[in-house]
Image 1 (tube, one colour):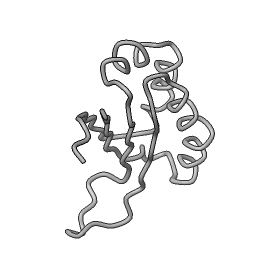
Image 2 (spheres, rainbow, N blue to C red; image 1 turned 120 degrees about the vertical axis):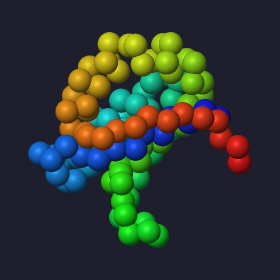
Image 3 (cartoon, rainbow, N blue to C red; image 1 turned 180 degrees about the horizontal axis):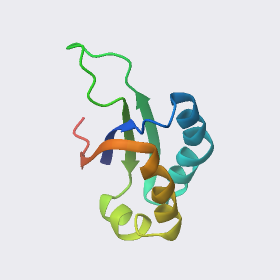
Image 4 (cartoon, rainbow, N blue to C red; image 1 turned 90 degrees about the vertical axis):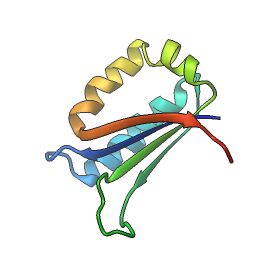
Amino acid sequence: MAKEIILYNLAENITDEEYKKFVTNEKGPLLESLSSVKKFELVKITGAATGEIPFKYVGILHLKSLEEFYQKDAPSQKFQDFLKKWQPMTSDFHILFGEEIY
C-alpha cells in the first residue's frame, strides 16, 4: 500500500488545541473523503530517544494508489482549497512517499 508521510511543525500563531479542532472537524474528514485515500492518521510527537524533536506532527495518508492521489485528488478544487487553509497553519514541512513493506 502506498503511503504519503508529511513531517511538519505548526506555525507560531497556531496552538495545538486549535490544530486538533481543525484536524477533527475539517482536515481528517476531508482527506478520508478522497477516493484515493484509504485512511488518514495524525501523530503528535511527544518525545524522542535523542531528546531532539525536529517535527512535532507526522501525518500519514494510507493510499489506495499514489498515482490516483496525485493525478486525481491532489489537483481537485476541494483539495486545493484545503491546502490554502492548511499551509499557513504549518511550518517546516517535508512530504515523503513510499510503499508499505510489512
